[in-house]
Length: 323
Image (cartoon, rainbow, N blue to C red; front, side, top):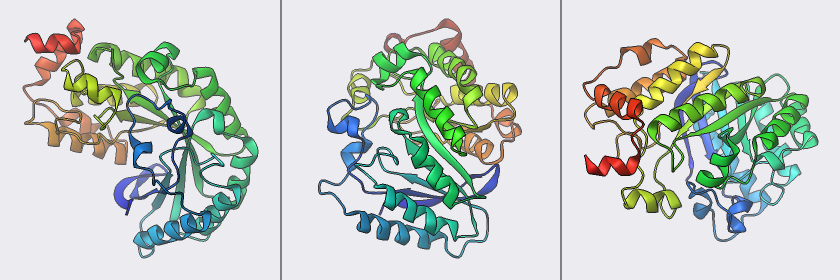
């Protein structure tokens, strides 16, 4: 079953999030052979399509995990594609899901995902009207505000202008915007990747309520995996994530800044030296849950000096093999 709960930031405060991956047919870009280079999620979509009624029943089953919880709840709905893709979820299905959530008093936040080009004002507006009073975010995978990086390093198929258009539609419809940024696309050094995220935050801030820094991990069957296997790509340092989060919160204190470094400490995930990975990842998650920078300021380790040298010198990933 692909649903689970975790401690998380719920509408600005500590609470519990229910994550639900609906088994739709997945991202249409993958189906036409244009998947993002780092993403394998659509590969996990079911081979046989589920009916819309089956998807509703699956969602109801997932909700049983939070039916007795008293703390603030966020429900975050994923499809390995786009919530507003009618090929995955029909309008009536979306409305039924939101009608169920509207009746749940402990659910304070609802988040769905969509690619920019699939965001439509009427589709967002009808959901806003159903769950009036609850915090509702539409998450957009901007990844980077640099169109060249989005094209060459990600194969995103969107531009920054597409993101602006989608964000304005979401705001006009009465919802909030979560912006996903990918930290460390391929072909960027650690230093360049840090600067790319910072520049992207600056450019996207006027259109964004929440930033989610998605730290690259190596997913099977992807272009990123092939470069990683050749030693031409290193997954990000956790120290870099700490640097980005501190900078973002200090410069944009009114924004919710989140990050969950999936696979932290593993060889396929973001990592430092191996000794401090768990502690640093824990600090990152605690900061995300509370928005308290003290969690990030407390973490220290000897390998911080090595990271600082690699970043300051702009060392490329393939050069690390020569050390």
